[in-house]
Image 1 (cartoon, rainbow, N blue to C red):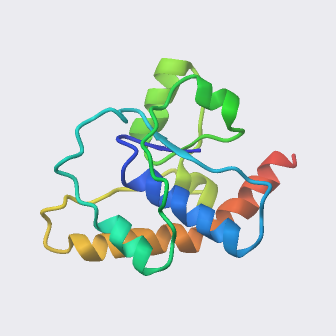
Image 2 (tube, helix red, strand yellow; image 1 turned 90 degrees about the vertical axis):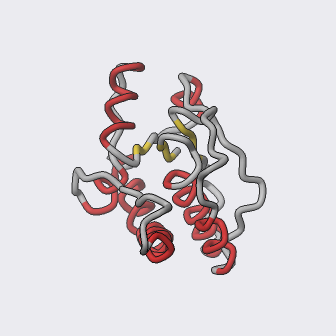
Amino acid sequence: MFVCTDNFTRSVIAEFCMKDFLRRNNKTSINVASAGIRANSDISKYSTIHFDIMNKQNIDTYGFTRTQFDENCFDNFDVIIAMSELHRDYIKEKYNRDVPLFNEIYNGEKTSINVGAPDSVDFVDQMNNLVKYFYESMPSIIRNLEQRTAL
């Protein structure tokens, strides 16, 4: 499960990119979802450009719903992956559980996945790059997770 703040941008892109990668590679043994630590927030002013980008790349986003992160997530998913230190620290403080960062699983770096402000001049480019980053990372993420759970 991928976790971000509002369960609208980072975790959602990661979820749908992984679902698409799994579908294209006929991997059916992995269940993937996303959640947010504030999934009940007002997102009416948020950009939806990332959905347009994924759909143009034939990444199916059908069935999108926001999910609030809670204790049940630990029971329903073997691995919880935080998009940033904020999410990792929130989970540690509220649930006393350690979860890895996305980049930690992907490339061993303890760095956050950041998202730009919708009013920035290059926001569309940032979103294109973010979707590409997540999609291209999926083979490594899956391989690295399989190696971690095989230990």
